[in-house]
Image 1 (cartoon, helix red, strand yellow):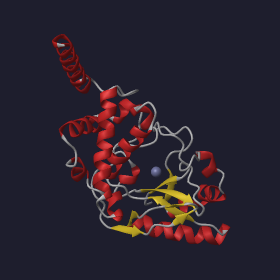
Image 2 (image 1 turned 45 degrees about the vertical axis):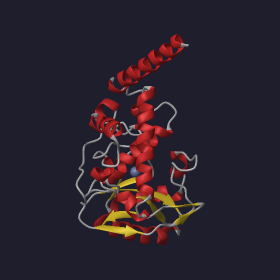
Image 3 (image 1 turned 90 degrees about the vertical axis):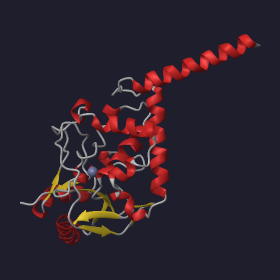
Image 4 (image 1 turned 60 degrees about the vertical axis):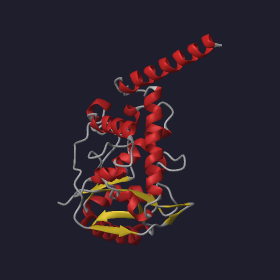
Amino acid sequence: MKKLVLTLTLAAAALIIYSIYLFNSEINLDKLNFIHRKIARSVIVSWENYLSNIPKDRRSIVDYDTLMCQLNFYEKSFAERIFKIDPKELGFKGPYYSKEKPGKLIKVESVKVGERETGIQYCPEQSYSDYLLMMEKMKKDIGKILYIDSGYRSPGRQSYLVFYYLTSSSDYSLKENAKWIAMPGYSEHGNPINNAIDFTSENGINGFSDNQTAKDFEALPEFDWLMKNANQFNFYLSYSKDNPFGVAFEPWHWHWEEK
Ligand SMILES: [Zn+2]
């Protein structure tokens, strides 16, 4: 009996030491080790608990420091290590924009598109007014409009999304994640000036929700119209096919840029 207790104690101690070793070991960018996966899931649970207790309309502009304060020691130190990784190491070649807050944000009410809601969105004033002008013209030309599926996202929101997508993927690959979701500070959605908008059609086609692919958005007459006319309204396609930034083709993602 004594021998059994001793064996179990030694096994438990070995497991703890091994877990600490794995926690402190280098982050594998292709595949997180099992302790890093566990901590990543725990980060997302802590953040979701916090976010579910704040008003819905504040979630996309949640502050980075506030979000980090919700984490315990292990979660926080792991999240900080993740956000210290240079995105270039992950194959992302886009520029760093900013973690600054934009001046004035316009609140855009949630819209029902197909079976889902866009959720409340925010846009800097100038890009929003150009968006409205652009939609007026689109409606006139082809009888359709696009809604804002994702507008301004704070670095805090971007941090949440990095962990959300990382923990939703099968192999927890930071490199794979970087093709789809930028690190905080590196997203055009968090750029306070030349902000990006992800569009959705009136019936919910955005190219990435509900098992859709980029081809679904690309096939829309609205996309064809954007390709021909968006530039006149200061909107530019950021990630074309074979873009030099290491980002997947995103026909729904257009950034605003003043001429
Ligand atoms: Zn986007």
